Image (cartoon, rainbow, N blue to C red; front, side):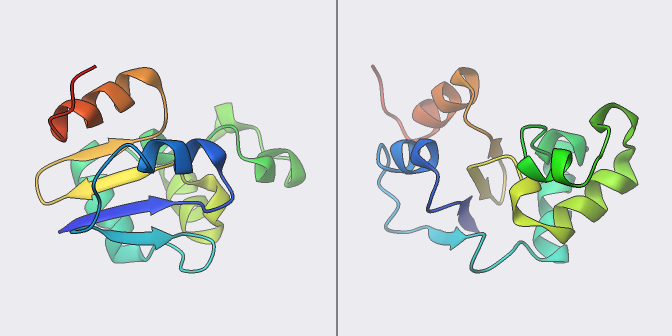
Length: 118
């Protein structure tokens, strides 16, 4: 399995994806085709945390009046399945590894995974 979950309207996602040769990867635009329960379970198996997959920058948090600090694992899971903006992105998922989000450390790990040096 080699999947990338991303948002087409996200400049950061597009910039990160453009760095890699993804011809053998399944690209999933999460607004058009949301993450399934099975895919979320596969991500959870690698991260051991729904919170690690959850974007605390989602506009839905404020719109829904949520307090991200008071959410528990089950809440994170339910929200991730409920609305695509709750997924931290992009997510690169393989049989053995997962790379979540756009922070510098994650992008560097991705570049290393793809064998790209500075």
